[in-house]
Length: 190
Image (cartoon, rainbow, N blue to C red; front, side, top):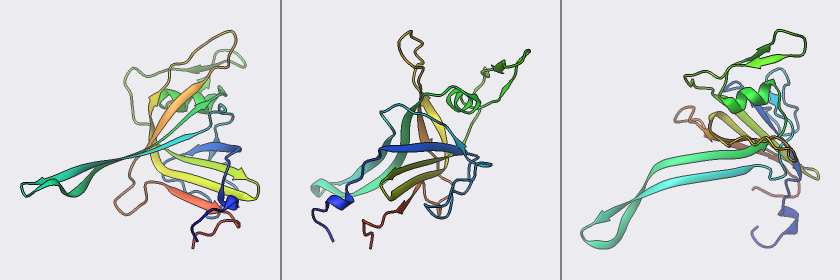
């Protein structure tokens, strides 16, 4: 029932971001743990959290008989997720840079990442989870790719931030672009 209900206000106080091979199924229930053999937790992010943006392009159909459009046609849909990672490791560096592998270096504790001179597609599945008290929310993009990166700033007084924009890609015409899975006894979705 619509109306004022403070029980339905959610604060995404803490959460996490995970990646996997494209098409990797997310847990079937919001209370089931993510499979660590398939899903990689990207670790700390900035306090800005995660920003979702769904943008539809709607083209009007104009007619000679009317000054207002007769109807609208959806011509484009973009779904993006933007966040800044704070940890530097094999998973976050390769995700930020567009794929490839971080390999062992010449000496113990040394690692190497080579940025390819020709970009290649680095599709991933993306999972986002946050909790607010007993409520648990999960958002999953089964297929997408980092389409924009922010500049990296190396300063004396601040953490290195790996900022990315991840854009959802269609799996096929029947599959959803993204899915929410919600476990929230205080909210009725019926």
